[in-house]
Image (cartoon, rainbow, N blue to C red; front, side, top):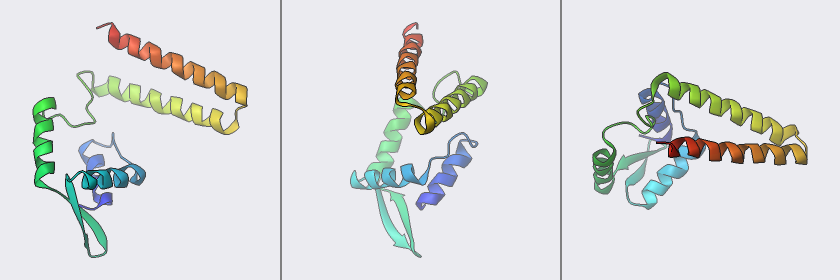
Length: 129
């Protein structure tokens, strides 16, 4: 596949929950190529990537470690709760971008402190198990 095909395939397989950007796919493909896990060649003016034997072995090893669940399925919670968490994350990210664009230095500092505190509280939730 070429990079755009990879993006479309991930979006399709995840039911639209995960659509990586070209800015994340192409550097990742380059890193995988540098690591010997994929090779690339030019075909009809497009860079096409293929798994190497080492890449196939890595896929099998990961399946053994994590089961056959795809990377966009993060755990047993899944479903509606996972989508609500995802939506909340994107809403928070949008609010932070607004502060970054239009906020004062003091507002940006306050927002950073709130996010740092929220991160600690989220990890505390996991520590309760």
